[in-house]
Image (tube, rainbow, N blue to C red):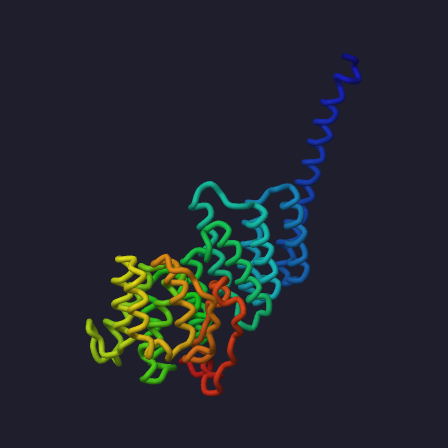
Length: 343
């Protein structure tokens, strides 16, 4: 080996070490400027420096440092009422989580669920980027927590929408939070404040059929129990119920244990007049037939929900294969101002 060959790797290592030291000094300078900008109220400059550090950290695959920096920065900008800049950092944070990928330990993946929920809560409904952030957060969660994302994340998002009076969006996320007792209480409140007396059973039936369609039987049963036990406008709180559709659910839960497709079809036939009150039921029952009774699906084209757009079919995107061609129906005039009516 020549002297030059022996010295080449040493020089290469030295060059790499020098480059790393230079990068670290550069990051330290940006961090110092960042602290100064925040202290002086120069939020645009601070925002740009957060972005600079994001690109440097991710390029070096220093994902944890990047996550900590962006989370801290988003919190500080929210405190300073710089919500648009804070939302941008939140989106970069989600991007970093996606780049990092799922972690081996479940706790490492879950720790960001309440953190992201808290950041979403800190952004007002008027922040344009918040809707995109919510979609991105849920998409990330589905990649590490399962098909619909972590139920705690949906519960946190639901609370945000509920507090703001956005009932439709809140209901959607409550149905995915795997907390049937809470879902039942929410449905009772929606039924009493927004529904007609004759719709008291429809609120329950649509929610339970949706939950069963999503293969979440336990939550569906807990929702049923809470709603039938505590809704003040139900004439009876145990079987047999006064409302035919509530009895239909009672029998449906018991038929699922038998897996009898003949019994399932007979039950649908028996309650067909009542089931026609909401045409979206056909779609959910088709999915339930396939999932729990091994029934062969038929092409279904459901019309507008009997509850209207406010409480209509909110699970179209989760029911692909049964209703890809369905259109979201327009909201009746009576319910257009539902958000502003909520106390």
